[in-house]
Image 1 (tube, rainbow, N blue to C red):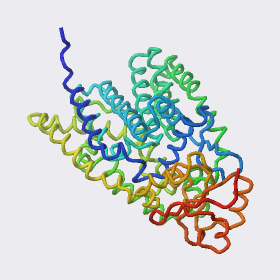
Image 2: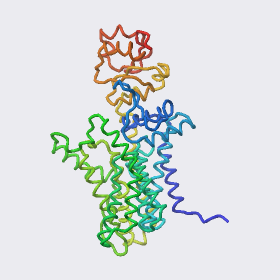
Image 3: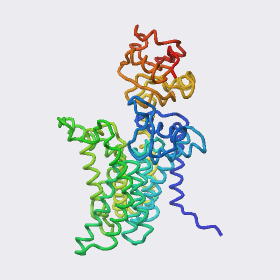
Image 4: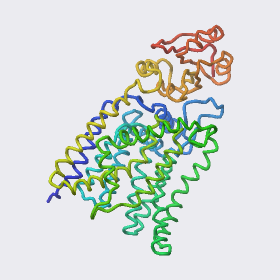
Length: 486
C-alpha cells in the first residue's frame, strides 16, 4: 500500500524544480555575472584537482607568478575537491559544477525545512519557510555559482539542526551531526565558524539556569571543539601565507574612512538586508517576528546568532563594501526563522486567509526575487573583458592545451586564464616589460601570449619577441612567441 503523499514536502520539491528551471540559462554557460573573479578562482581549484593533482591539501591556481609553483591555499577546499572528483567520473563541464553546487544549495534548503519542523511550526509552514529561504534573493543569485560559501551555508544549517535536536534529545547522533556540520561549514569558509555562538549560548545558559554545568552541554562543547579542530588547524597553517588581505583587518585597517563606513552601513540597512537578503515582501513578517504573541515561542538562540552576524558585517564592512553580497549568506538562517515566526504571528490574527495568503506569498516571493537578481547573471557584470565570453571557444582553441602562456590584462589573476583555459604568468595595468617576456621564454618555458593591451603588444621593444599573430578576437590578440621555450 502506498504511503500518503507528503504534500508540503512535495510542494517544496516543486520549488526546487522551479529554481532549477529559472537557472537554466546559466547551467551550460561558463562563469559569468557578479563575482566571476571569485568563481573563476574556485573553478581553477576544481579544474586542477581533476586534471593534475587530486591531493586535497594542494589547491592550485592558474598562475606561477610567485616563482614557487601555483599552490594557493585559502579556505579548506572540500567543495572544490569534491566537485573535482565528480568531474573525474562525469567529465569536465561547467554544467556538472553548477548542478553539484545546486545540490549543495538544496541540502541547505532541506536542512532549513528540518530545522523549522524541529521548531514546531508544522509541516506547511516549514515547507513555506524553506521555499522562501530557497528563493531569498541572495541564495537565488548564487545557488548554481561555484562559491564555497554555498556548502558552508549548508553545513551551518545542519549544525543548527543537530545542535537544537541535541538540546531536545541529547543523543550521540545529534551531537556528531552538529560537530561534523560545524567542521564542514568552518572548513569550507572560515567566517561560518560564527555559528558556534549557538552552542556557546546553550553552554552558558545551562550554567546560569541550573547553577551548574550539565554533562550534556559539556559533551556538546568538547565534541564540537574536537571535530572542528582540524579545520581550525588548517587556517592556523595557511593564514600566515596569505598576501595583504583586507578581511584580516576589517575596519581596523590603518586610517579608516569613517564617512565611507557610515555610507556602507546605511546601504546594508536600507538595501542589502531588506532587498537582497530578505525580499521587500518579507520585511513586514520579519519585523513581526520580533513581537511577542501568545503561545508562539520565541527562539532565544536566534539573538546571539543575529548579534554575531551583525557584528561581523560591521567589522568587515570595508572589506565587504557594497559589492560582496555573498558574504551575507550567514544571515539567512536566523533571518528566515524570524520571517516564519512573523508569519505565525500574522496568521493567528488572520486565520481565515492563512492558506491563500501563504500561496500568494510564495508565488510573489519567487517572482520578485528573480526580477531583483536576474541582471546579476549578465556577462556585462562579469568584471572581465567581454570578448573573453564572446570569443571563448576561439581563444581556447588558438593555443594547444597544456601550453604555458603570458596573459594580460587581468587584475584578478584568475578570470582571463580561466576563460581561455590556460595556465602561466598573468599581468595587469598594461605593464609587461620586454625583458620579463624574454626571461619567461628562456627560463620558464612560455610559448604564447594572450593580450588585450596594445600598449604592450605594439611596443617596439616587445615586437621582436612576437613570432606570429595566431588570432585576433575583438580586443584580444594571441601570439606565438619567438624562441623555442622549453
